Amino acid sequence: MKKIISVFLTVVLVGSVAFAQNNKDQKKDKKGGDWREKIRAEQVANITAQLDLTEAEAQAFWPVYNEVQKQRREAFEASAQAYKALNEGIEGNEVNALLEKYLDAKKAADAVEADAIARYKKVLPVNKVAKLIVAEENFRHQQIGRLGGNAGRPGPGGPRSGRNRSQMPPMGDDMMD
Image: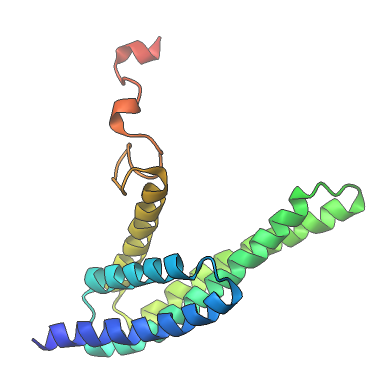
């Protein structure tokens, strides 16, 4: 019973933080607020279920996780802006500077991920950090699958490939010729 209450409290706590953040996002972007809120709520529920956090772990984990998510968004935005500048077709000496800016943004994004794992290890047992990484990746693939119409099916026909098994070529010896 205590575990159910702690999961409920965690979901309510994270939901209120996500709601506040999404309200701020909605003011910036009226079009996208609803779907972002739904995906974020699904993500929180998925992570909560996969990690089976104790109340103490949840209280320590969710503020760190929310901060990491903010840093990930900022790193992604910087990378996207650098890519956009490269994609505009600027030529000459400016290209080299733009390439450097793009590479720096990518390195910063990688640094955010490395730092995130180190921070998670401070508040969670290492096995739960591993479960978190798997849960996030599975959730991402599930969302990609939804966009592609595969409903998040794992495996070769899953979200990564964009094809289902019936669309895959045969894998027999005739493929070697």
